[in-house]
Image (cartoon, rainbow, N blue to C red; front, side):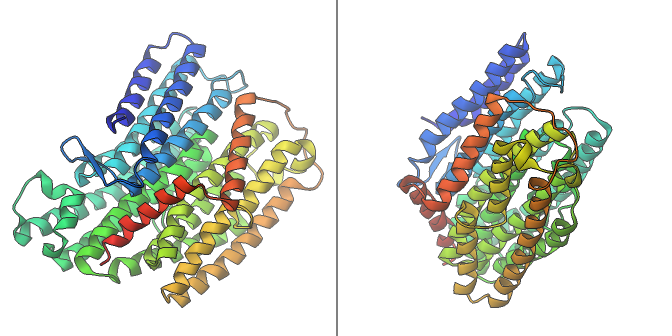
Length: 489
């Protein structure tokens, strides 16, 4: 099994989607491609924990434990999103999407998966940058699948802000290359290879590397939804179809975080601890603080979850910045837990939108009475994303906060705890309004085996990972922590 399989399968799936003559065949190609990709990804990543890094395509592609965590995430959430979309968009529903738009969705869905995989597998910083821009272009078409005015506006805002953001990241990459060449390392494509730069970190100019990391954090931080660069995120998440929102929030943001982590490792190796750590902690805590008031007063449940993503990306950044084993381990685990939990919630929102025909929180009442299964899943998902035990997010949040105390960042850790308490109170208030009480309108009943099956799987994941982390996955996380910590000296 080679890494090339992960890049070829989405291309073939997209090509077959173009050639699909009917909706039923398109649906089969769409789901089968995601399933085959997931199977190959799982077979590859769990061999990586106990082995060294694997290079392919002339050293431009790298699979190490850190990349493997994100590959696992992309493939798994991608499969869940494909299965959900098979019922949500491709099934017989009132959405009535024409075949040509479904083809467009299927093509750009698989191109989106391909570009995200290329982001996390890239050893070449230039290819990584191109791939991140590719995720923007592909996902913009997914946000605007229904061609509504609000969707078009959200897609353009997303395109413009993220393109401006990663233009800053490009300048950061140029500075890294300049730092490498000015240190007497010569010129050539190899000096854009992350592994080569890491091996020559002692020769990199510390001052240039500091400036480069600032641009990288602003550029990739825009795509990751870190405050104050997050303004595109609520609009894009709220207007996109639910399976797309699950990918955007659960996986796309994490891919951008992976790029920041790679540059953080490089900066720490060249500059020493303190500089990039401090920036990550600052913007991490700021993101949690900015998300807090919007969560408290939000009236749209999809935008509520979008601001929650800003909060959790901030927690992840802070965990990486704390730098101890518990902080880094908690941050990587939190990326996984957040992806599964937030995906489940956005899938649930697809159900809720179909039942109640509104995105307004005040328009959804008595969810537990009108649909006990959906109400239970949504109830559990909200409690999970708010950090309540025994759900998985609690474990990773606890580890991040433990890392903050272990690394003696007492002020930042205390501020995060206070903000999390307020956010928990806001989620409980919104949840009580939606799940309890008498319904305000007659729901539109529907049952779809594809969609309900995904909710069952998501619920199982967020509960089981809060109780027990399987050994192979634990080994993978420990290997990823060693990659992050190893460069700190």
